Length: 576
Image 1 (cartoon, one colour):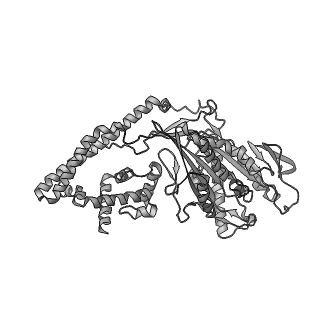
Image 2 (image 1 turned 90 degrees about the horizontal axis):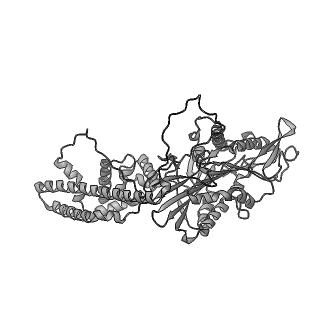
Image 3 (image 1 turned 135 degrees about the vertical axis):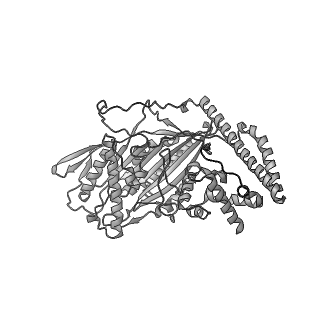
């Protein structure tokens, strides 16, 4: 069951401001156009100044959390800006690091680096494995780590771990969690596994040459590292933390980059998404309840948790010292100054698993077994009986199946209630602390807001990890149709087939539902594009289907449609 636990690091602190670091790259080999030296320089470890373009005799000063000068190494950037936020993901919280700046300012070098000077991404992943290894084996927790890698190219979400994939949709579940159905998720157990998948995937990223940058990134790249830790003993608490590592494409002035054709289209998509990112920051800092335009761009949609959401966020702003980058540097510094005012509200994402097969369900096993034996005997007799006898037996079969479903529902409900009882008795942190609704204050009595404090985007509620118990009540207004002979034959069509063949077909269908991609799901009978994406979305949230009947829990899949789906696929499989 999912629950939300507020952050309590350092007293009563429940908010986390976006930390902003500025990194100034060294001069390139070529002399700049005006040969007037750098347009920006650092004053100390937190302050820098840039020449005022309105009056060259004046400078504009900026203050940030960290300033990295030209001589700063990759290791120093990681230790001072990135490493402090990594432990949060082991407490079920999210963390985010993203590089921002104009094209040619060194964002990709900061995030990726090289084999001799690895950047933030390889260092952060290595540190995650180091922290897992440092955990005491007797602390009672099991850890698992996974990765996903994508790029946003021309407003299309592409899976870098599966280069043949098409544009992936962005969805939001009922708990306001952003997810991407169909995105590849790789489990990794050591850094070598990460390197094995990450290096080839990085080569799939779209790059091209411009006048300002020999290898310019033409897309935004986002790497997701997911850490799940599960308690070994009851009540089997599970905490999920995510680390987002983002390398943004740089803003471009097409008059200086010389972009044409496809490069010009790419540049337009990049600049539009970065402009939307700027609008999001302005909306968050406005101090009023204006709409935050997260949905105006796929980039801001995916960064929704990092800016104004529930993540511990660090933005590394990369700038260049040459005069030809002056206005790009000036704009980047202004954006960074606005971003450091954003306040996030992190919280811990925690779930409690109800483990199947506990003693609470044993009470129902004996009666359930006798019912199953009776069903099997009746179905065997049905195959060799006459029409009149078959009609009576079909009625009894239908009644027994209804009793069987009722017993299964009671068993699940009993185990769920027992799990909740143990949780409330052992974990007082899961008590409902929601405040009562109050009347909204009038405009005359509202205090003036000094700064926007954005509510978290992810609000988790209690839910079992294995599956949700849904109790459907039949409407009393619906008239029950008279059972005809044809209806009974339709409801018991499985009993007229070879049971071993039916079971074999069900296993094939279950395998496709659990491991199939979008194309393989659409190969099933009565499954179109929309239904296949809904299945992928359900699988992303709840995991694999335990049995084929769990498909009813997918949105829009009623019992009648499920029965028709099963009949069509089983008959199709047996006809091949």
